[in-house]
Image 1 (cartoon, rainbow, N blue to C red):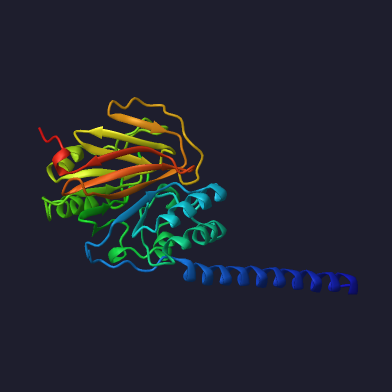
Image 2: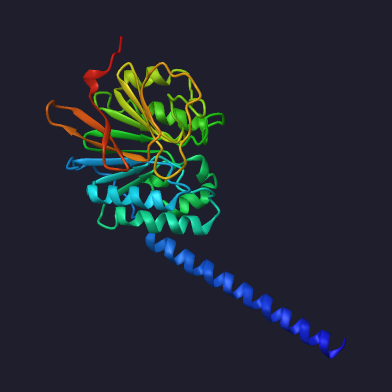
Length: 303
């Protein structure tokens, strides 16, 4: 081998080693930042002092819009923040998670609890589990806040089976009946009632199961918009305006009350005008409240 070829080979090896070293260093720094920025573990006790809960979802692709929504939520000084799924575009992109956590960490830096719902863009389960520390380290779980039992389900797409579907549905039917007299909110990424872009997520008998066990509302995302459907008093709410591009309506939905292609979040508070009542308010990115409903167990039409 000539001296020139040997020198070229040595330079090439040094460049490759240098690139590998830089990549490993970047990955190490990213993992350290993720471990520092990720939410703190949640506490599974309901001290009944929670006064404000914020829900939003589909932050995904627009960092600017996402950051503006996160600033507004931070100014709410909520006790609990719920993300209804699709935090980022691609689960395996470390830079997307870094951007998400950098924007969102202001929400839990002051002790606000953060409860995630797994969406279809969090399809690599072990990465999702590594970032979020959920109750019992499960992707479906339950907790109580503000006198409400929240039930988070793991169903990422409207036309695919749920994660561990048979076991998860059996678990749902068990936990939803633990305290039948308590109001409940079910959190699931694909909407159970929607005008599209995608069809609704349907499982036979769920609406009746929800009615029988005092589910006052569901919180979903997936279809980028805000929509509230009222079916027998259950408020089926889509809150998917955290940063992803808006979707058009493409399906019929006889229960739809309001649908707006707005970047937004939803505020949940107690309604002190009546015991056991709760107010849901949708807030536009300009700060305008464009939808509000007060509901309770007594609002459900179980006939």
